[in-house]
Image (cartoon, rainbow, N blue to C red; front, side):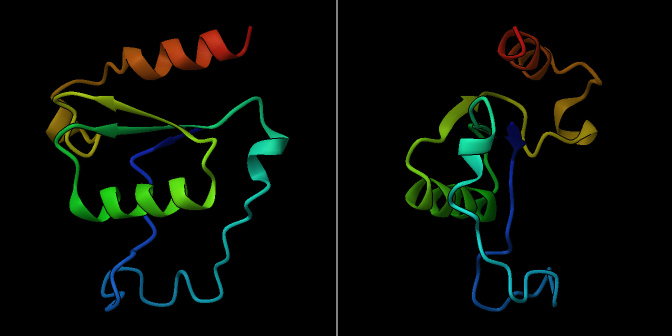
Length: 96
């Protein structure tokens, strides 16, 4: 499994998620049901994403966190391309 710039609206005010995460509990055993879990985050990371990744890493120390430069929040406006070879290669190599 690959999580790309995961976000859980980690700030106290929850101003973006509204009720989306009410009752949300992280299943700490989910990596056991995968062939591994990798988190991709850009070196120019968004602060909320950085906090989320810290929470995930604390809850699930086995997460493989990889930093990719110059991708921002992995959106078209940040990446300036539809190409995402790092994700493609990660998925293709992990499925073998």
